[in-house]
Image (cartoon, rainbow over all chains, first blue to last red; front, top):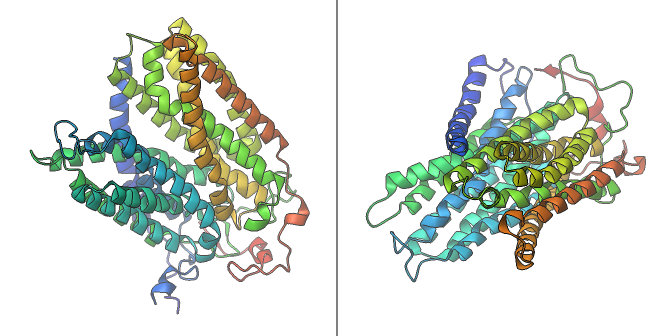
Length: 42
Length: 470
């Protein structure tokens, strides 16, 4: 049997939280890479 | 039942589900598996597991360790190619779940290999199991994204595949930080780091698997209707996975991807050495590492920007830009090197790398345009054998040509010039293949009365307008 799911709209908070969950580590990685890349022009 | 939990019926979205939850679910997987490109941070510690401060006689050699990454890439290509049909049948949740199990347990088995100092266990762990996780994880969300974003296929796949480019940027500093945390006088902390990373990646990929949803067969975005006038290069029909292999378009697109990746991957691997030899004395190893980091940023950014732009430019035009402009840029690099213009050299390479990344992210949307959306995940998986081929061809070509040039007495600073011109020729070959890509002949299309054995429905159902979600 397929589990019934509610027909309510996706919460905006859930959307924001999930995007932050993936984007924050990515921004951390990008900033670390930019710091390393600056050595090229030092 | 557990099998029901993974079924397509169970993960079919209900009205009200926001399609904008799907890209982060895909990113949660791709940001993890993108760690593969950062595996080299383990290379040096793995050569000093016994000696700690310096390699001991019984320590593993760097050449043996190099096989771990190569094996992972080979198994990425094999699993993506062979699991394509299964993926379309079972849906993205089960595929992501299996990918998470393989990738996570690959790390754990490797940790055991480090603990017992058994390189074969590391080969089996990260190389084989991890590689299968990579391949399944890479292709699993692609067709789902294309089905959720028929209006912006390029942007949707660009978001996920950008994650694969960005995964190394998280994986490398994370591994370094963890090894620093766990290291002691008797250990470099590699085993503990592999255990923790395996756990973190397993959980993150499972979050993606639990969040992913597929659209109902008759779903379309609010206010969007497929073009009334049929566009020649965007098919509304579908081609079966096996039938796609019988079309010339599949092989032309295989060559298109292979040429684009061969040209990029060959020089990417040599970027650090190349800039130091071309600008001898003015570029330190630290600055060269910064150059490689900058290329990674452009590689990642290009994945999103170029594939998003392809929604407006058209897939064929976008690839024509990659090949024509890319060939010109490769041909200009030697002159920048000879003129000693570092900024120009870096800018040329950055643009080249953005197009290299763009090639990866634009190809799924190109396949969806040519073969339809129904089997695009499986067809994409089979096309990724071009990536595995280029992964071998590119570095071999660059290394062989460099050695040949040096043997002929060419100065180190000039040894790359011939290679760069040959890369430009490879891109021109890709341009010719791309020019030959046309719409698939009707005889290959899935007919209305062809029963679809993958999910038991008729393809015509998916072309009717239906309930809308955002």
